Each structure stands twice: as structure tokens, then as C-alpha cells.
Length: 64
Image (cartoon, rainbow, N blue to C red; front, side, top):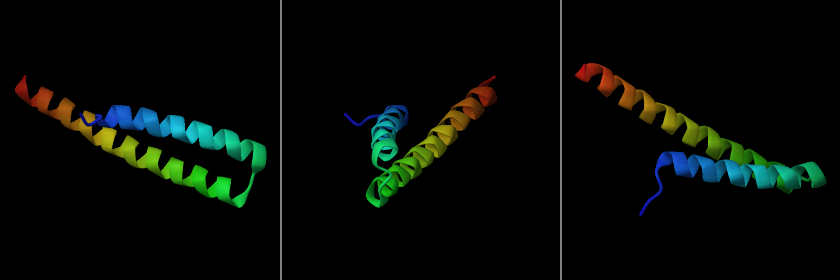
């Protein structure tokens, strides 16, 4: 079973959190790149989730 966007977003945030902990300790180029990659993933998934929520809200509003 594939995770929905919300579950993917939560998982991406947890990955970001772990990467950020490493960044705070080391502040290396590699850890910087990993944190940036995680942030981009979170941002992309947040945008998808926002569109999903907006679509659900609009279709619900149209039914009334």
C-alpha cells in the first residue's frame, strides 16, 4: 500500500529533523547539502498536500 501525501510529508519532516541534528553538530558541506535536499522534499510535498486539500475543499463546496 502506498502512503498518502500526508504520511510522506511526515516522513520527509522526520528525515529533515534527523539531517538537521547532524548539521547542527558538524556544519559540513555534505550535511548542508543533505539538509537542503530534505527541505526541498518537504516543500514539494507540502505544496502537493496543499493542492490536495484545496481540491477536496472546492469539490465539497461545489456539492452544497
